[in-house]
Amino acid sequence: MSTAMNFSNKSFAPRPPDKGAFPLDHFGECSAFKERFMECLRRSGYESAACRQSAMAYLECRMDRQLMANEPLEKLGFKDLINEKSEEKPEKS
Amino acid sequence: VVPGETALAFYKAKNPTDKPIIGISTYNVVPFEAGQYFNKIQVKQRLNPQEEVDMPVFFYIDPEFAEDPKMAKVDLITLSYTFFEAKEGQKLPLPGYP
Image (cartoon, rainbow over all chains, first blue to last red; front, side):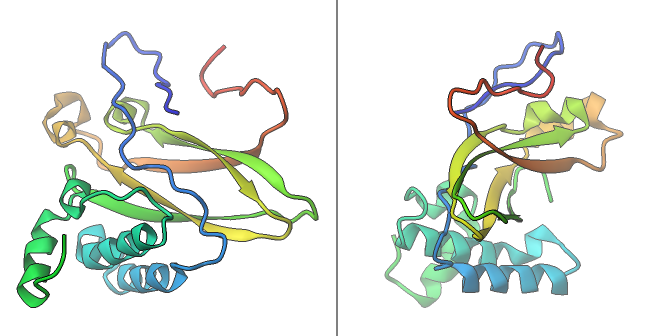
């Protein structure tokens, strides 16, 4: 559920949540992917843009294991990375 | 993090007790005005005894943020995550609400 916590007089329509909430990965199935992502962040000085490939891999791991609702990667902001990927691997929806 | 680009972050939570805990996690953003460009979500989750989990937060800052003149001086946004125990029938005291 989402709530708009805002007292200001500016009117703004609260946007419905975008993919913010996840079930817990109780068995750490995607921990390796998380580690890879965190290592990338440390190496890049916490530059989020540098680690989008790893972020995408993590989310794919979650989707493959039903730990996240399936969404096309383009909708999650990885459109440009998909195009690179499909050059190496033709099979990817 | 660049407005318009999705980003991933992780928080860690641990249940140090011997009983499972149902927790509610919520996140908040400062400065206050930047919050309108963020989605705020509350999630109810269960942590087993002694369980420690990494919780991902996947978020997106609306690119309109970069065009809002009131946001021109904002170069640091802090996203904080709170995980607290839900009690049966408890009405959630949301920060900022009376």
